[in-house]
Length: 143
Image: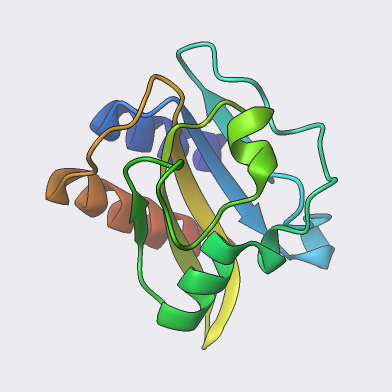
């Protein structure tokens, strides 16, 4: 878990985001995607570790990454089409997010998220490159 924490820390260092998470369905590790397997926090972002009340795989944002296989960049969560769970904004204070799939074969095993609680913000190509690196590094560790 320390290696995953280090990867998420590097993601936050590179992007300036407030929260980095890994969610995955991996019964052998005791992971279920409705609760993060790992989380790193900054900027006073509230933890998501104790809340499994949301079916994250059913969320519009996660359905979008499952369908497209692409990294989702949402600059202002109040103005998006692939809706995240309402709790992401209301309870966990996210204002923008970038989410990328971790594939096991052609199945979305899990996803890495970077949330910003400081306000809407653009996600740059540099941010997306940092997300791609985090996804690859986590995939190399857990798959």
